[in-house]
Image 1: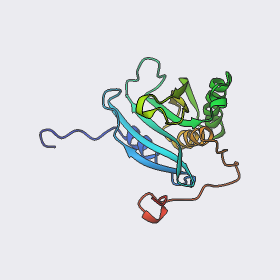
Image 2 (image 1 turned 90 degrees about the horizontal axis):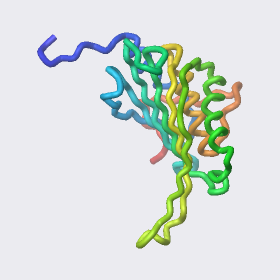
Image 3 (image 1 turned 180 degrees about the vertical axis):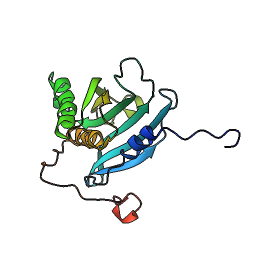
Length: 198
């Protein structure tokens, strides 16, 4: 090891980070690697995704893996997942007082459906209305849902958690989850033909 070299990350973190990359992905979802935040934990990784229908982006999200071998207050373990999802929604939906509890249930039910055991979950659901003024006065009013959540996965294999996050994004985009007996199409990340047509 030369001066300035960093020691390799712990094997537990490496295994968990590798499990963020699903081998089966719904055709509506496009993944991308993101730079991981550096100050939240000693080790971190991040992925981003967008949900498309007919080349229209309906929802975006990011999922961050944090790992601290000593754990942190409120984590209940060495791992923590932090999720963000944003989707455009119709104004009448965002004005529904039940939207918050329903959006939160999308996450918890998706985690349960994928047998992704977790603890210490917490988060917020935000409705945002954007209006244009001045030279943007003619822009249409837009309404968005934002969900931010974090939880502690009970296992190193995070594939079920990633699949649940994908379901959450699809639900926020108005696309129902796949039935349990229907498999997503396999896609290779290094195959340009498997990417959504730009």
